[in-house]
Length: 199
Image 1 (cartoon, helix red, strand yellow):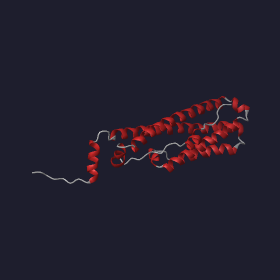
Image 2: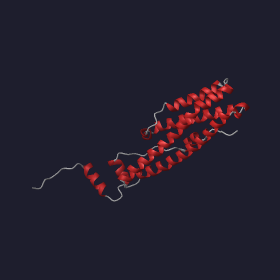
Image 3: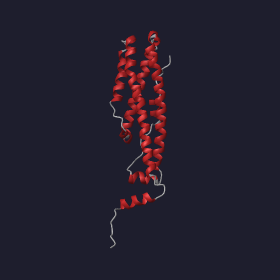
Image 4: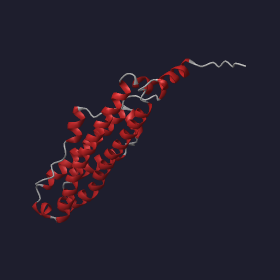
């Protein structure tokens, strides 16, 4: 006895896509994982920078306690950046992604002002703890730049797979995936301008 089955147009389309050579199902899934991993590394480096700030602020405060406004600015910028929940879901929301980048730019600006203040205090600049923190901050800023570059490359690769035919059909109809936000030139300038850490 021959049994007839009914299939919805979406199921037929899905079956056709799976049979098509180059449907990209696994490729897109792999690129999504790689993009999320690259994003996690960006977050890891931003967290490393955030962890340095309290010690840096305390060290500067010991020599320049009256620079309260500058000390508070960097502390508040750090708190604002920490208040943004930076999960892989953030990559699906362009406005939230921009808020995150703006918060990180504020941290960079605050650190820049804090280190400029340190320039005015020779005893602070000579302090070994300050010099160690300065060196760690410089290394962290470099790691942020490298992690951001890796993320940019992975997102570009992922976004091509999601947008180009025929993999865009798989992305849209089977996986329900869309392009992920990318750093823009403006964001890059705001976020990637590391504070000057050399005196």
